[in-house]
Amino acid sequence: METLQKQYFTADLIKSLGIGRNTLRLYEEIGLLSGRQRTLAGYRTYTEEHFANLKFIIAAKKVGFTLNEIKSLLSVLKTQKNDLRSNGQRNYRQS
Image (cartoon, rainbow, N blue to C red; front, top):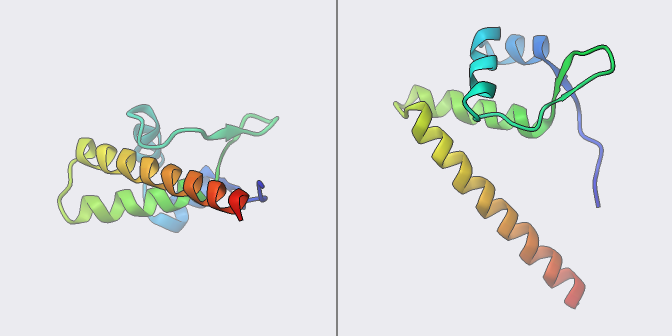
């Protein structure tokens, strides 16, 4: 079941998180943020998951992780999240 998520524009993220537009674009280019969409007018939009990932990236950078290390951490977290979701759905169907 898919739920509607809040959508953020670039300006929303950079203002809320205190990052620069170029930083946001860099994170997209190197694969830290993926799956963003565009409006019909061409504006980038981001989900709550993107927002949470950005908060994680910022926190990880503050404690000294490199961008490559953060990318690896996000990959592990995504895999674990998908595994949990699959197990939860399987358990739900079995009950």
